[in-house]
Image (cartoon, rainbow, N blue to C red; front, side, top):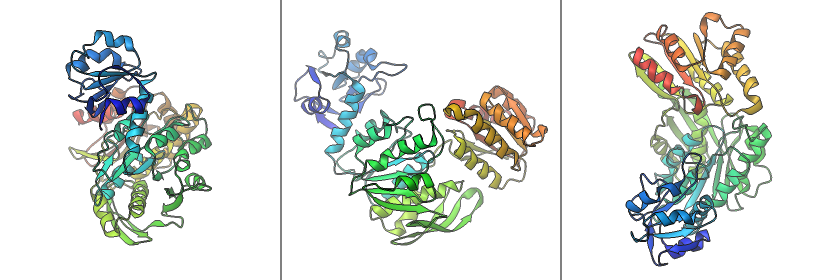
Length: 464
């Protein structure tokens, strides 16, 4: 974002404390360690850091100006001496969001908002891959999908951008509505809806309503991209103002996958029937659920007028995401690294991927706790354990207090005790597996972000 102090004051409804209205800035940052000369620094107050504490460093790095909520902090920083300006506001986070909304309002970019319980990041990458075949595309970097990350993504909009693909995450009601208010999407994608983030959202209906805020934000000129195979998403598409475009495999849909061929660890081949013709797709990812993500991406491409023959090219542009069904080979052992996050539905999908994976040796499911499930924590882990017991796994390694519940449930469901390991710490799981794995074996690692199951994988690779 390139702008001046006058526009900034207007956008954030702030008070000019230092500087002249004609002063300019190029780019916006909230990180004093990486801010570049000429950028605007917004002092965000977080759980661990307060940006006001780093104003001296920001001044030394030649920031163009700062946005603060504590004017007292300005007294000890040499901003005026460095030629920087300062604007005061009641709430710097709201100011960041207001600035992003202002910047968005000046752009003619087509915005695609992507949310859902699972598959948001992968779908975002697939959409961006397809749109990039025709349009200059901005996309959410990494997982910057929340009330801070989305504004920062929007503030990277340049005049040359034609499409912006923005991931929208949430853990409470009203959050997606706020993100949509800032980004003003014309296309909304909800990948799926299942149980997750149940600390503030107490029921599946609460989650459905919170995700549905994206569809409700679309006006008559917008398009809701709807998973026809997910009844909760399908229900959200009723009585909305936007046009509805459906995708699916099992149910009738506008964008539908056919002739699906599993190609082992290299992925899937299938055909997609669209209103504009049939598209052959090669999907270089594990997990049948990723076909749905690809269909959502093709649906967005169709809305934006991208030719069917460009769709497969766009899917091939996909940037593989780390810790999401990532295949790692080490000394003849296959590690499936799906440790980025977990909830009951994503664990089920991961177990199906492991069951389907063609391995000459044994198969181990290495599971960490599923977090943020609230009152559903115990029943969800018990259900996963019972389902694991019914699958042909040679080992079920459970790490953590909640995962122990899953392991005990697997035992109660008839799984051989010799195949179940209940571990309190990462190192216990490493020691257990190091004695049992051999070349040809396949191990799936799955758990919520806070469970840090990648540590088990990393330490095990040092031992085998």
